[in-house]
Length: 125
Image (tube, rainbow, N blue to C red):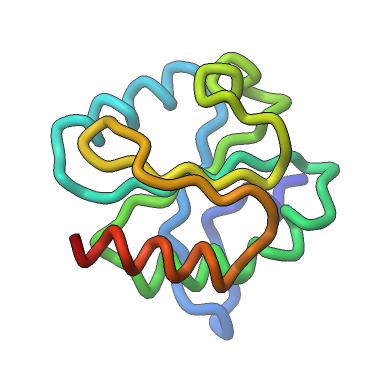
């Protein structure tokens, strides 16, 4: 379980900037910080038991290293069910893209290429 939510990565993947959120307090702090910036936030709703979540994790870490002008958060739906409910997450993985406190995109499933295109689209807006 620790590997799934670790912000560490191998040298092959590059440096990861994914922030693992494990408590309501951490969520509130990160959310407050985001609403005061114009950065794109990508919230990765995942679960430790989810195979597709584990399979896309290296791609998410690589995207976080590549798209340094975005903020990547990982939320375990079992650890923070209230946050998952707030964002109406019904399946994992779900990626919610937020800008200035508003949802601007949502990808349900381990769709790496679609997620990357959506991130690029909103970073260029």
